[in-house]
Length: 286
Ligand SMILES: Nc1ncnc2c1ncn2[C@@H]1O[C@H](COP(=O)(O)OP(=O)(O)OP(=O)(O)O)[C@@H](O)[C@H]1O
Ligand SMILES: [Mg+2]
Image 1: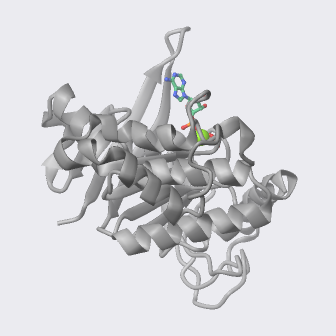
Image 2: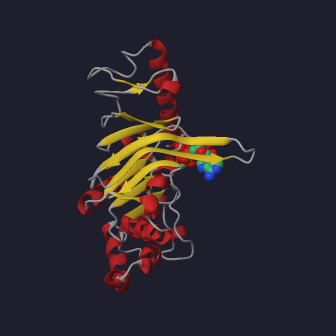
């Protein structure tokens, strides 16, 4: 049984003018315990929507989501909230730390909702986690006095302090320079591996995505497996979308071909242009 299992999940919202916006159009994804998965895609393609569904912050319109084999739709709101707090840790682009609260108070916050030992040991657990992310000497510092990279490390400590089974990171390096972003990802990978947590990272940065064991690309609400190596060149079986997006099918390249090399000219150019845009955004960030 997989830890997370989405089958044909859609998410649609009604716009103010009554039109329906179909954000996710049949997403199937499984994530096993301890796996590291990355999702890339242009702005507005539904990445955060997907992550919010995985983290029980949003619900599919249709399709099924099983969390450890349990259909989420059958849980009460209360059970869902409990599982969200216990099983998931969130890391966001803008850190989302509580202002006016020290680093220690920020990391203690999730433990206020925990039961038993975690609740009673919350200050010690939070201090240990901050030490683990290299901020043991900044416990009483306010977030606004910390650098971006340090704030993201506090956020990682907060995400991990309850020992979640899944870490969901939405553009965790998006507000950081390349080097600091790399350090933050090192930390996230390392702690996730040590604690056996699964890690799902959403990113515009192909180098960040390449660190994961599996990569996907979200385009027009459809999730397509891709493969990136650590040097961020496309390798191996690179499935891509055919030009007719209504007929979304996968096409695979022979191992070792470069980007777009064996595709029809239109498809290659299409994929290349998307990738260029992703890279441009990445470049603009740094
Ligand atoms: N509740 C909502 N009501 C209306 N539109 C929504 C809602 N939630 C998401 N959208 C729209 O759905 C699309 C996907 O949004 P989402 O935030 O998932 O994109 P994203 O891939 O995370 O983009 P970015 O990379 O810019 O963060 C966007 O066009 C967004 O405006
Ligand atoms: Mg987003």
